[in-house]
Image 1: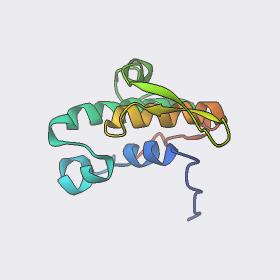
Image 2: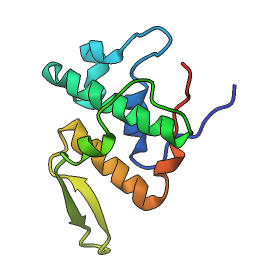
Image 3: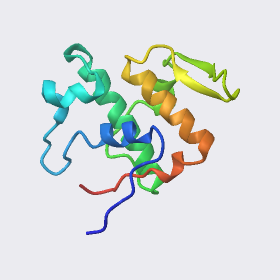
Length: 131
């Protein structure tokens, strides 16, 4: 088996979230506090996190030329709800989109996607069609 390179930038968050469910067995890491902890997902927001995960999966499947496994809320609709701000580094003047609050998963994912789009790496993150 070949080793895959880690996703660039903050896309690791997207990659790791999409991989919280084993499609072959149905085991879902978001069912447990330990599985939710790395993402800062509270028990009362698990349904939202799953909706985001499956919308991300559909986008990553599309990157690979595959249809979504099931109907999902379009990712753009979800990401449009994420409050982001433009930050400017005073040392070098570089600018980036960042979550208004580092807590919400949706905002962190939106910032990761925006960073990847700007860097030209968003389309490179893909999902396999079969489990």
